[in-house]
Image 1 (cartoon, rainbow, N blue to C red):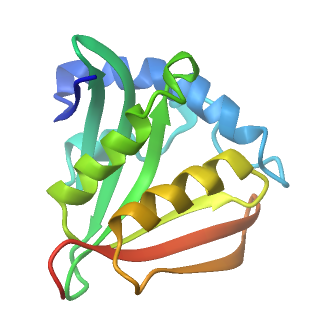
Image 2 (image 1 turned 90 degrees about the vertical axis):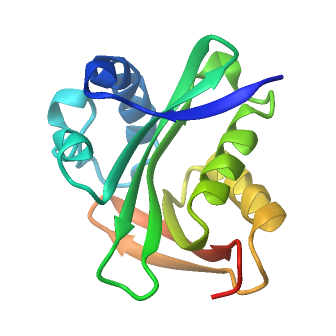
Length: 165
């Protein structure tokens, strides 16, 4: 199975928007408090991924088929800069094929160093997925913390991948 991740050009924005709608609808089912965007039109930061040099839109491919996307953010003011997996989506019909894990590993390899990501505490599938991905890739300094967000309880994963800091 050939998986690749590629930066999404501005002309591919509509492709991400088309996947952002079902992704945000799915995420909304895990929120404890019904706030936040449920479609691409309400996603306030989407344009920033093509204008902010510290935001990175990616498409995830299986062969010649786009099967998902990821939106990554770099906190450049930190030393060393920390990466955040802001959004990550694999279309449901392509899950449980190893695509997500391969894509996550590709992002971690592309951007070594400190990382973080968050998931709603009720999203058990995402918690299991990210726990497995991080365990396979990160060093022993990873941590998980629970915190309260505007949409309810979340888990924040912090970890380091790649060369020692």
